[in-house]
Length: 310
Image (cartoon, rainbow, N blue to C red; front, side, top):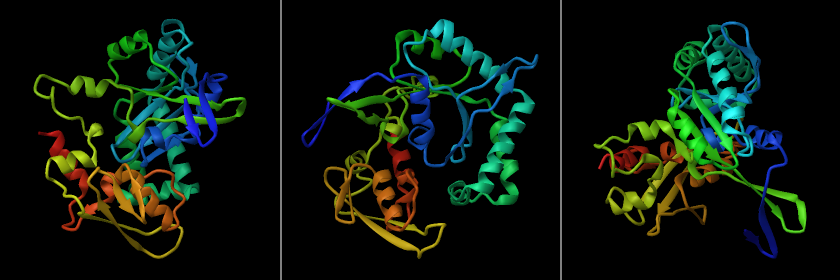
């Protein structure tokens, strides 16, 4: 249950698969990251012409990876619904003509969407190189991305048997008690999936006991003496749609939060988002780990990497 002033929100089931699918489309950056681009549904075919339509595709420009997206409900059978459906989609996604469709869709979005242009620009990808970069990304095997309302043991076991990497994110729905039309959705923090078979594979005997990058916080950097209490972090941002360049300074607090604009933020991404929106951006997400720098010019993502390697 979530309590907001005098209101209570209780967990509720999704009405149908379309509801969770639409929630994902409208909020995809909270799953796939701030440098991701969501491609709409498209009919793709297997080598023998068998047609299938995934819920969407995602290109992650920062990690140079791409996803086949299939939003699901746990009430659907893993063996008679989810597994055969995803298997057919993965086979179709490997076809050359499928990748050409996705490349063209991405270019079309780039041409029409200023936010997409900003994502390419932030990563230093020039317009003349867009198709080359997309071709390199799509040449890789896709990741199976499954946003779902819950994860069963069978779903975990199935995901771990696939030769493809699978990421499962849990999205929860809450409705106001006695007012079910007032709805809230819960997404995972920092884009972290509930299950990531790629991380499972990398967890060898040599890596067991080491901290995963996605689990590291500012507090971990403080405890590792890589940051200090009251240390200043800086971020410079200029909105693509106009406005002047601004410099933001955040203070590292003892509890691992960042103080910016007289407010405390629990993660660098939330602090960075507050900064860029203050500058006039309409972005909904941003990677704070690559946005904030120490006064010596060190990106805090580099400090995070040092903790994960310890």
